[in-house]
Image 1 (cartoon, rainbow, N blue to C red):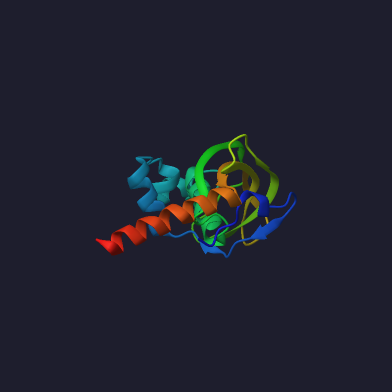
Image 2 (image 1 turned 60 degrees about the horizontal axis):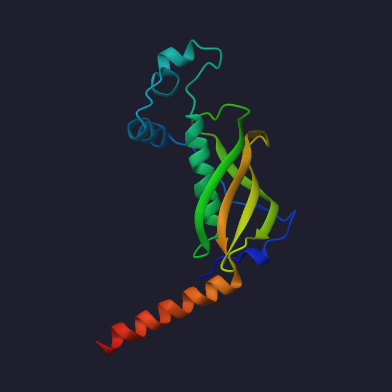
Length: 167
């Protein structure tokens, strides 16, 4: 496991993800998966006549991209237990097809819970386009293993592996 335990996150810690360009394929696929076929996403002629003058990505596609860019940072690989919530999410500016976005995360808080194997991590997420504009922002809360929880999990995994090898 290469992810960080709750004790390893520092309040105020900031990380930047690599960039990702939002493509036609992203928007078409997301329309199909979500069932959201609003013409602002799917109809070039309709959206050209709108106040924005062109098609835009779904707001929730941007939110989904945030989770993917966060995963690319690798901080929670093998240590995330569960997503607990998304709060204060704001869609501040449109994401156009062809925009390249990256994620800036800032640790708001990282605390242990009453259970010794887990903690709660809150991070401010900011999706930023190639012009430096924050297009989406909010707080994501995740349940994360503690060091003790990771050690216990590693012990169980090692015992399971040993038992399988002995069979």
